[in-house]
Length: 453
Length: 134
Image (spheres, rainbow over the protein chains, first blue to last red):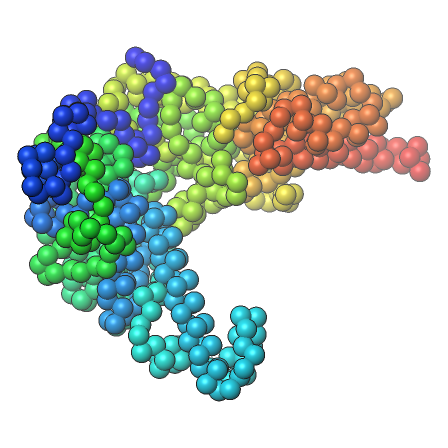
């Protein structure tokens, strides 16, 4: 067994050697540009890309014509959300998503909100100038709008002859188990809702959302459904027809493929349209211009094929290892909490709160194992994870969380090593923890007046 | 986060972890921080009637820097008088451990813990012999 052990497979996965083998010829002799239609080098590259497109499509039950290659899932999420809002701006401007989504989705939504506000301010400015208010500035805009009783929404609708391409966003809370309530989702849909964006499986707590039910609801209500499926694809079955997903983000490096390549599934029947983010040579049917990264795309295809072939056995193996890890740790330590539903969960994910032990300190003491802290306390903000907070996990517990991500190359021997190490180090840290001592003495920690700092 | 060697050394071999008898009139206890902020430090000092710190113990819930800061100050305060210990500042701790800016608050916590423990000790003495301190 080699140290350190990699158990952070939600962050990224190692390249499968079979994937690397498939890629090598396209980094050496077969270097052609897939867009070169007039010679053998180009034809060979194009054929390789088209084969990869079929392999990726097959993994999610799509047609190869529905796969748009991108630089990764962040770009796919951006393209899906901004592209749909831009294209369908005449239809409406409302998005619904979850507070536990990936930042690529949340921050795309936030930008659309900012765009809407900026356009709204421009419209107000226009209206005020028509009311002969000459000295309108950014500083007195709100004041003058109030003076003239300019109702934002009414003005927006009346004056926005050309819709904005911005958006209003509803960020839904999740239930304590990390899953969205379908009733709350249904209630949030309005006649202005264009898009619902819900992830397949969460990157921190591994919780799997009721995607088929969400897809059905969206289809019934005539709303497009985008699914960031990055963490779940290749680990659990996902079929775009069964899920009724209209747009699906995928990336290669979370399924043992190379970094820097991803895809967006864009449905053809019924047809979904998006405005491109990148203009240029019209590659990928105009949805994503740019010379294709042939070797990476070939690797992505191979990774997708391997994931599809090995999925049932591998999912069962990962679940066995995860359960071994879970029961191994929980059988020896008290005061632990599993974050997120255990039932609706990625097989390789375990997110645990070790009460009265700080997550970063624990990671530091198990440095022979690469895991990730549920809390983002290494960042400048020192704020605990927004995903755990959205699930209602108390701040002190959110600071005590560790995410284990078991993957294709982890072994039983490694899991057993991790169990021994974690149990030993948690005990050591708890011996050093005033909170654990107080909890053991029966002191209610909530009754203490803590000094905030 | 890349920690300095001194932080790692203290973290891996923390000095003076433990608990002193709270009921002992010569023991002052300082409990600072908050669980919701991700760090709580408890520093206990046993102080002679002459005002010399003869023992120090800590327990800390927090990151590596918080543990190292508390371990370091237990070493520093031992053998010092109360007045000398009061002059230890967070800057000294941060400099000694080369704490990154985002972890400076761990050293602030360590300074606060010393002050809180000494304050607790003084309060106990006042309660014990109001005449002396009056």
